[in-house]
Amino acid sequence: PNYSQSYRDVANVLLDLKEYAQAWKAYLFYFNNGFNIEDNDIGEILLSEIIATNNNNENESSSRTIKVDNPYKNTESDVRVVFEWNTSEAEFILEFVNPNEQKFEIENSTHINNDLIIDQKEKGYTSKEIFINDLQDGNWLVNLTYLGNKQYKPTIFKVTTYYDWGRENQRKEINVFDFIITDKKTELLKLNKRSF
Image 1 (cartoon, rainbow, N blue to C red):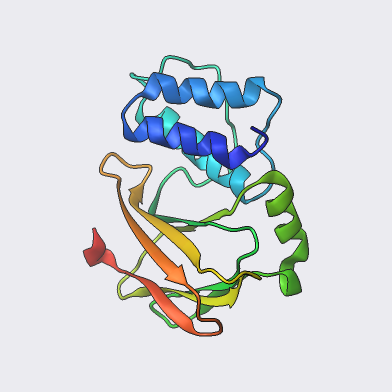
Image 2: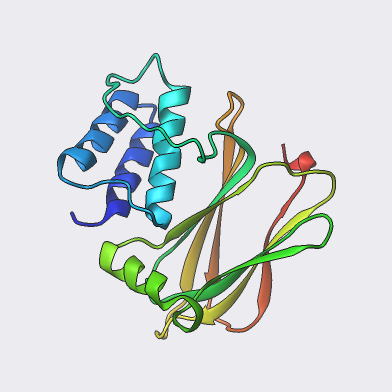
């Protein structure tokens, strides 16, 4: 009951079932129980999904009492990718390579980002979102280097890719990966305009 990600999961199930009024009730319950949108990964994900629910289901939502005003938040983009993993002990490096072969890395490890790992454990979330506003021509590669999880079982990653995020023709694909071998770069996704 103290984990933000649990409330997000409930709201997402209701949204998938097109139970928009119930999804709004889940969001309202979250706020009415003293939670707020924090400046962390799960806060960013919740904010994205509340805005999208509000924008895409205006006629079907029963409540307009959630006000979100963030001029810096992506309300639409070519691609939104949400990464979720099953243990707060998981350490890894996400790498994004654009069509010009420029790389951007995010490391989720105690060595580089210990404060983030502590926040994930204390607040109960194991997720991150990334936006690609403009796919451009060519391929975007999304790679993961698994660094381990301090356990003898694999880490399971769920990767949800939303194409045309926040637009009427938005759609999503879900991929699941098991990782046990460490220090090996693995391609998770290859994104391009043909993906649409």
